Image 1 (cartoon, rainbow, N blue to C red):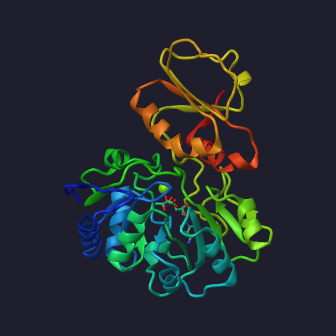
Image 2 (tube, rainbow, N blue to C red):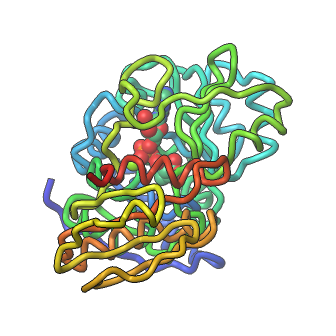
Length: 337
Ligand code: TXA
Ligand code: MG
């Protein structure tokens, strides 16, 4: 696998066609290209080429039971990836695409087993950024892309994060700067009687309910048995985790009597009244759900770089607007005590 990873800077607003062409060429010959979506950087390969897709699993060290999301440039390409395009899919695509919503539908024959981990369903979405969509258009085929990190690590929101994990394991990184949304897409399964949220994300359950006019159910909370038919196999209890020991508490009061080590970092999410503990190396305050989504992974990457003994995260309130951020923090940390 060792290869030289090239980095091509690209303007997110006016992407240089020759850089896109070059990246599309790498994809068409079975290579791996990391590129920014609005959520996190994805590690892309030609979804119709089993050998190329296998390289994604190898580069990430990803278990083969975990299926990949297929990124498409428009709904015509989405429909080619699936067996049927039910009314519900049309409604959600009209409402949220391009955007951070993945639809799980029955797959068509153009999607090989390695993409779906042998399942008869496939996750598809149209990403928002111009770089991502034009890259897919130029490649002229659907692009399978998980987050561009080593399996179980923190998802990348900067090209630098991709290189920290995958330098020398992939062909190219298109560096278009920080991602804007910062948390992975909402994954909704449309193959069951009730639409089911397999992974909470930037598009909330109530937004989906409003668009569809039907109730949606949720599955796949932290600790859910992976691999079951109604869960997202990627939703492992420990995931998205920093290397540093990371502990969570529900509120500032729970830190009374906490024995702080000599070097610690504090991440306060959702606005808590809390004085700095002794010998704190660094504190991060993430006030709103949007700010927390956008900056959480960058903050966790920074905590790892500080070489502290512990990262303590004070959680935001347990209410719907914080659902996705709490989900990721629940997997990135262990309860204190
Ligand atoms: O925002 C995102 O979704 C990013 C960007 C790059 O698009 N991608 C991403 O991919 O987060 P990944 O592979 O890290 O997570 C994909 C999630 C996993 O939890 C996986 O199990 C689930 O989607 N998934 C994919 N296909 C599925 C399917 N057919 N059925 C159930 N879950 C599926
Ligand atoms: Mg991932």
